[in-house]
Amino acid sequence: MVAAGPPSNGSLGPRAGRCGKTADSVWLVSRETARLDPATTRIDPVGARELKTGRFEGDDTMDAALRDVLDGFDRRDWQAADPGDGPVRLAMVGIGWWTREQAIPAVEASELCVTTVAVSGHRGKAEAVVDDVATVEAGVTYEEFVAGEAADAYDAAYVCTPNARHLPYVRAAADHGKDVLCEKPMEASAERAEAMVEACDDAGVRLMVGYRMQTEPAIRRARELVRAGLVGEPVHVTGHNAQPLLEMIPDHDQWRLDPDLAGPGTSVTDLGVYPINTARFVLDAEPVAVSATMHSSAEGFERVPDERASFEVEYAGGDGTVRTDGPGEKRVLGSFAASQNAARSSHFSVVGTEGAVTLEPAFAMEPRRTLTVARGDASAEVAFEPANQMTEEFDYFADRVLTGREVGPDGAHGLVDVRTIEAVYEAAATGERVEV
Image: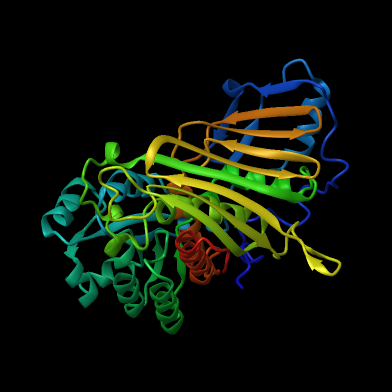
């Protein structure tokens, strides 16, 4: 079983001993609910550190205690490369709305990477990117990309095609000696995901899976709080992720509703993967078994089993706070829900023996999110402006390419999630608990 956390060398996790706090010293109990003034909390884009300049109104004890835990938090403690070391030239493989509206603008904001090649199944779309983006010097078709055209114009590839089409383009990039950042889930099946890992291993290139939550400052901050012992021993993790897919993209024939392109379903594959993987990252633990319930009845969802889904995941092991104790292995129970036909919302929470950490909204590209920490009768809300999630992800990948270090959420890590997703669908179909 692959460890959920990235390697200690340049990991996405906090530096060992950074907080230097024990479970008894991370919190001083207050009976008031405090709120950090969001107007005085800001991100310093140069220093890449979150500046905690606000105060908890009416409670100096709470203010000092929480700040004692969070002082020194560096949202980019993984970065070793300087802008002068780059940039890494990227080929964007798949020019759908996400690439055009999120990925390319995120790279434009980066100091470590730049988009130089656009790859699409439609030559006109690729050439439109050449016309619209000053740094892009070549637009090629999928077939030309596989054949190696414009290979000297990029250093690494970002693959953002429908799930079932990741493998051929990841394999092609690997064959050309290029590192790869591939969107999640890795592929439509575990078998094809395994082939991706094998292709990159054989070629000696890096394969990173695009789990942007692992470089999201709020999630990384929550992980530090859990690892510092704020919640005590983790017991339960909850999460949900929902959106009105057919309102966002009013097309019943879109690939997310096509099992041949999306994989076994839509809500769990596209949305449920977020809480599954975020729990692995925050807990530093692995999924070992699942159970699930699914339902589809609305128009447009006839081909998929999970218009809406709820599922439980058992987590165990890892190098974090979830440990074997005595004769039995401790388990953290995860309760998750996902729907492609519900109001847009997301939530993530870890509840332990002593407290809880909650983030809402959790997974979408929201302009503002709130991290709530609670212990006993005390609670505090920290509202802040996060960094651009995609820029953080691309910069982390570019940092690894430039410095020659291994990536954290690599192909083997992503393969665990594909196997977990398949187990969720099997559990829903059989009504039985399925081991991962």
